[in-house]
Amino acid sequence: MIRDGIHAFAVLAYDSSPYLEECILSLKKQTVQSQIYITTSTPSPFLEDISRKYSVPLVINKGTGGIVSDWSFAYSQCKTEYLTLAHQDDVYLPEYTQFCLKMAKEDASAQDLIIFTRYSELIGKRERNSGIHLFIKDILLLPFLFKKRICSFLLKHLILSFGNPISCPTVMYHKAAIGDFEFSEDFQCNMDWDAWLRLSCKKGAFVRIKHKLVKHRIHNDAQTSRQIRGNIRQKEDRLIFERLWPKPIAVALSSAYSLSTRFNK
Image 1 (spheres, rainbow, N blue to C red):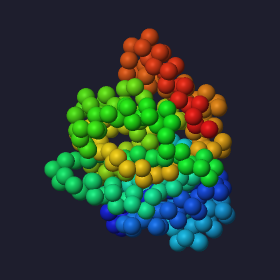
Image 2: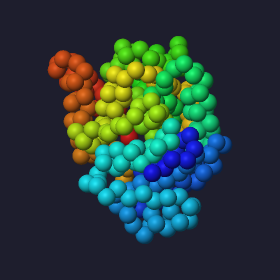
Image 3: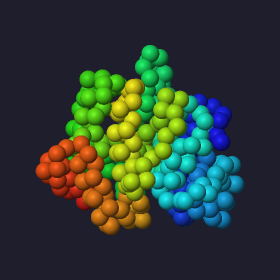
Image 4: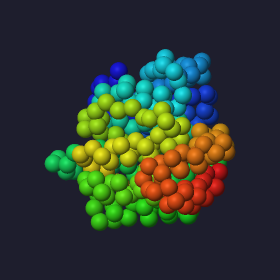
C-alpha cells in the first residue's frame, strides 16, 4: 500500500512501452513531489529494471489482469488523500500536481470528487493543441466557463450526456471523498466515462483546471487506438448513450460521436 504524503501517481504499465521512462521522469520533475509507484499485471525484466533505475516501487496485480482490473488494482493500492492514475505513454507538465492540489484546497467547504485539466496530444514528436475533437470536448464543458467547480447533479450529468469530455489521464481522484471504488468490468474502453457517470451521482464537486497540463500520446499501439480499430469503442459508446437517452436519440448520438475517433491516430 502507498500511504505517505497527500498525493500519489500510480503508473499503469503493461508490455515494454518505449515511453515509460519519459512518463516517470515527468512525474519526478513535478514542482510538488508525490509518491510514485508502478502497477502491472504483466511483470517483466523491463519493468523491474525501470523500477530499480528510478527507485519507484513496482506493485504486481496478481488478480485476473486486464485493463479494468489493472485500474481498480492501482486505485486500491493507494491510501493517500489524492491519486492520479498516470498512463505510461503520457507526459505530465511540471506544474500538474501543484495546480491540482492548489485547486483542491481552494475551497475547504467543498467536497471535491475529481480534479481534471485540459490536455494536448503528442503524435510522434509533434504536439497538437487543437482539432475538432478537442473543440467538441471544450463545448461539452461549457458550464465550467462560469465556475471552477460543479456540485449540481444535473450539471455534472449534463456535461457527460453528449460524450466523455474528461480525459482520464488528467484526473486527480480525491480518494478521501470517493472512498473505495472499482471500475466496471462491463467496459474495456469506456470504463472512465462510466466512472464519471457513477461519481456524478455522489455528493461532491467536479473541478476543472483550464490549463493544459498533460500531453496525451497517440500512437498505433496505444490501448485506445487498438480498441477503435476493433470497433470496441463504438459499441461501448452506444451502450452508454442508451443508458442516458431513448434508443433513437442514443443511436444518432453514438453515430455522430464515433466520427471523432478518426482523430485518434
